[in-house]
Amino acid sequence: MADSKKYRERIYIVKDIILTLSEYGQLNQTALFSFCGLNITKHKQILDNLEHNEMIQRVETKEGKRTITIFKVTYNGMNFCHEILEPFEKLFPRSGISNSVFDLE
Image 1 (cartoon, rainbow, N blue to C red):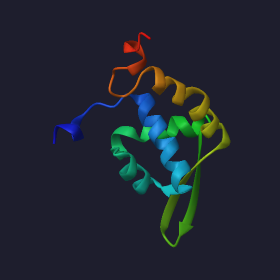
Image 2 (tube, rainbow, N blue to C red):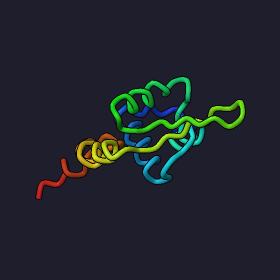
Image 3 (tube, helix red, strand yellow):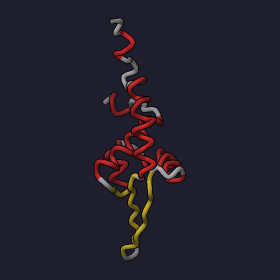
Image 4 (tube, rainbow, N blue to C red):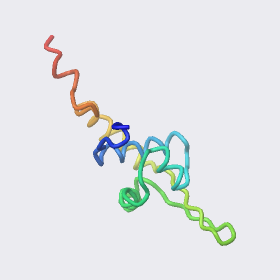
């Protein structure tokens, strides 16, 4: 139960969103937040920022009275993930301890 309340830094949330979208191709908002373990009310601003910075794309379609919102990762988002986020996580792993710090050889 303690793991579900664990704090996750914003940069790792961004990486999880981008990688989840790249894995599935496209997801609706509910599925994306569910797969990433996020709260829609708390973390919607992160999605809005990613869209504003053209890291992800939002596509809204009407089905009767409902509006379906689909998210897709963009080329800029994938490039950002590979060039910035992956090297960042190598330097600062989620566990907080880098194995390379202890390798003295």
